[in-house]
Image (cartoon, rainbow, N blue to C red; front, side, top):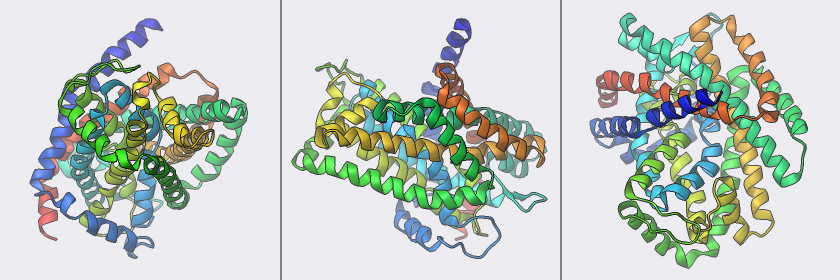
Length: 442
């Protein structure tokens, strides 16, 4: 087992290394330039379309454009917003936050292109479900000669979903509840399996309904709690931004419990954890957006691009600024404990509780969102009859994840998660002329 773990570590270092990060960032930059910065210039219009899309536009599809975004956000707003941001700052210093922001702004173009392709090339199965995502826009957009690339994405996506989207998340909830509230792991596993089963067995429509209510509530609640931390250090905010920007372009010396960081470390960890959090380029979100009630790919693309902005520019920024403003980034504490330390400094005793509850809810909604992604990948590979089997296996995996030791599973899932990006990025680059043409027609 040790040799397999060592092998996976080496593979993981490659797939999440500089070439992959350059490819993800480079693809986003290429799309942003090709779109003539449309995603940034249409940010306000995107929010207007989102508000208008709460009930759907009475077009073909399964869920409203609003709930399509909430479903994708349910999968992206997760442990990356709490643990991922803290890890990036712990290793890369405050400057990592700047590179997370830049990655998110560029990633808006990637998310836009993904959703445009997803709606434009989607299919309808015999039960009336709308299917889309990288495997379908590869199949229908690039032709049969590229079908193997779509199969690769579906295989990586299906396998990764059980790790990064299920067992790892269940484990995160169980341990957060045990640490903060002394709730037995088995009890959390039991509650999770009941809640997950009640939602997942209803398919994407029920998942979207739950996500449409839970995601806005949890994001706003965490945002407001974070604002209390920021407000208590209001006068120091300009200095914090100065430190973040300076650290993005200059090495940070060791101080306190912080080991020091180079510019390369700030860039690498900022970009990597930013992508891990908002999933721009991984190809997961367009699977949810393909089910939106719309006949306008560009309209849904403008809604989809908000996912990256909300996840990273808003939610991740709250975590990162709290860590920098409170000064706990020099304490030597890492992971979720670093975020808890920041909130506890301003909200003694309750701060850690807020972070733990947020982490639990974020992780639970990630389980729901990723069930859609895994299900669609499995249906692409094995047909519609495999859907119910997948849902049952998904529910069974939840308590196993809650009670297991998942270091190896986390490593495997993280590797597969990165491998999902390769077929998707190739497809986006090849289909970029279609994206540009559809955009110019509006």
